[in-house]
Amino acid sequence: MHGGSASEVARAFLKLGLTSFGGPVAHLGYFREEFVRRRAWLSDAAFADIVALCQFLPGPASSQTAMALGHMRAGPLGALAAWAGFTAPSALLMILFAFALLARTPVLNGPVAVAVVHGLKLVAVPIVAQALCAMARALCPDLRTAAVAVLCGLAAALAPGGLTQLGVIASGALAGVAFLRGADAHGPRPATRSGAAAVFLAAFAALLVVLPLVRGFSPLLDLADAMYRAGALVFGGGHVVLPLLREAVVTPGWLSDATFLAGYGAAQAVPGPLFSFAAFVGTLVRQPPLGLAGGIVALVMIFLPGALLLFGAWPFWQRLQADPRARGALRGANAAVVGLLAAALYSPVGVTAITQWTDAAIAVAGFALLAWRRIAPWIVVLVTVLASVAAALPAILR
Image 1 (spheres, rainbow, N blue to C red):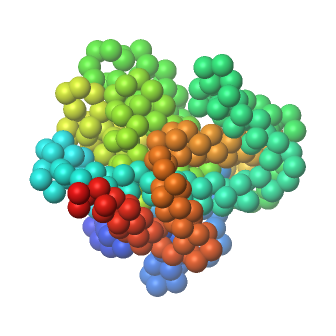
Image 2 (cartoon, one colour; image 1 turned 180 degrees about the vertical axis):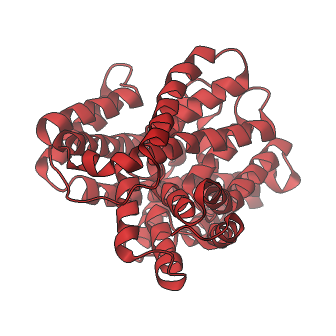
Image 3 (cartoon, rainbow, N blue to C red; image 1 turned 45 degrees about the horizontal axis):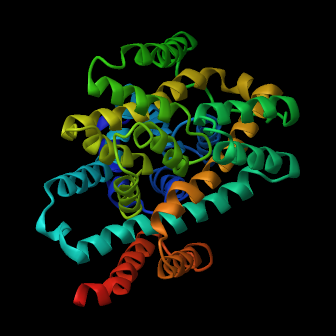
């Protein structure tokens, strides 16, 4: 498939970065339409193989698919161009929103702005609930995987002090090795040589070890470590980034729950990958806020582990997916993240956003629009924010 240029890849993915609403599953549909049907860069079978690998690995599946497609078309520069083109529009919008909050601009002050921000927090409830339902159907198709999800969710929510995200996912993976083994049949042709792949895997592991050792030397290094660990643990879909990022930045007090959820709500209204939410988080974390440098570091570091794993695992994919223990570990980890997302739906999402009966009614209506009417998420964001403002009108007009 090589033969294109990085600029060609960048233009193609920039168009998708500006227009791809709807989350990771929808993104994969856009990719297939653009690169299999319209541009004929690869066959349906080759595209399905890439998607299968990206869904097997931790990380943002749609962005990893974009990088793989860019690499197959134009080599390493193509992979970088695909990521930049697909990510830049949403990342820029999230950084601008963060700076608007920092500046306390007039449009974000007053009772109307408070209602708008509350609506952005509130929209996280139906968004996460709908993602939880979809993930549960896909990742917990039988009683055993459902049991792993329930136990992991209870452990995250109710255990004394709560288990860490890593502990929950590791527990799910171990349960999967013991009870959920299975194997698949085939994989894609390698895109990288085994030697280069080993370097990528070594870099992935080295950063996991080294970054915690340099925490404390600067706020940016602290942020880099937190984002890298979050990106390395995202199994099962982009919405899993919510509990992982919350543990990374809210638990240590770098950001408030209210601001975090307002940004997460805003992230639903922009095109491109949900992981661009990290740019918002990185801009605002710490005191004083890290600003643009924090936004860029957070954005790069949350995507980096998924990229390293993608190109590290690709040559070994056939052997990896044929190993029943590896498949079992993946099934267990995926079931665990369903439990994590369920715990996050209760707290902080529900507890923080729903403070009165009108909030509950708006959240239920938003879920109905998403799950039953199949309304686009950005429209649900707009409707929820308008409903929040309308509910606050009596107080605003007083």
